[in-house]
Length: 529
Image (cartoon, helix red, strand yellow):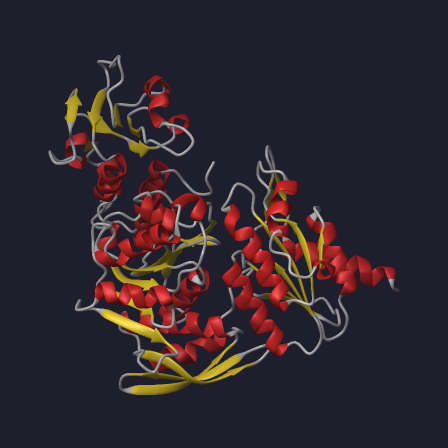
């Protein structure tokens, strides 16, 4: 089960909570309670390759999971990586589906059900969802943030600045979904297009005028953001990640670039690009000559840039410069990469019409997202930080930053996820050994892969065997690291960040690095009294 209401229940909730005009509900809710939505309202001739049955029939909702089909629903039988939705058509019909969308007709077609064959099911799903929810992206100014690292921090910064302390700004991201009137846990960085449009609709109903969303490469490739009219799209950076899915970094980059070139169905009104990043510069060359491109970075050529950067352990300051102005920035975020994240957010907000000087002033009250270089303070005489860094580049950046501000030793606990890109495992180990004084390699989310096999891949990156220990049990590894830490040291616990679980082959167990650290420190402090 996902962590928020199904599309039909979302509309019922919106109907109950929205203000009525002249006693009548407005928007997509009205279509359920006043006039039923028909298939003919949702499909055009261009969408349909072939049809068996009639489009002149009402539907009560759109569903992707056959187990959640209710009477009158439209069921999309999507092809998937692990299973094909066509296998569940019979179940959907038994549960009362009025219509089925598929890429090939089944051998036996139920005469009581309308079957619609389409050539590109995910494209059609996105467009049908958009129509069903009455094009909420046209009523919101949406900011999309993509890149390997920094998406969550940039998205949270943008929402904080745009809200101005009082405005409701919706958000979809890795940690949570802010729907304007309520907050719900995230179950996927970029949800399916049906859910994206449904959630944007809820934001609009709650009074949001703007929204920000993290856009993953999977989300782009699987058409989850197809057709969304982004007011601003932000490119943070691109480093080696998700190659188990994309196959190569070139394919990964090509996928990311679609958000900016119009390949997702709409071209952003403004593209905000990191000029300090190699792939950011490549993207700029692709977009050369197009209107609405803004650059950021430390580069003197960047339109929104930082000069006079001063890094501290608890804050960062610099001079923000943009065409026509400048302002001092004092940010609670630490590290050079967070200077880049801050510039990205301010450039995006400037594109949304905000004054950069006011954006800079708003940073003083910003609180970093959970698990993003989050400091754990329980009275211990050394520094403990929890971060989501799970690529070699992210680890190198995080550890390089901590090295520059740590008077003592730099310690790190890290792991590599199972059933993911194996080629990055030795690179992550190498990145850690380049900078850390000592490391504990441990389990991250092993999933169905053997920890021994993961460790074998990681060990290929070992430079100095005497400065790393391999401990399968993550809690044990964290405990050993805390035992080893001395006053003035910094301990980074990397890889899981905000996550509150650990995935194994056939189960998911509760596991929160932050909570585990707090519990272990308390136990160790009590044992010393």
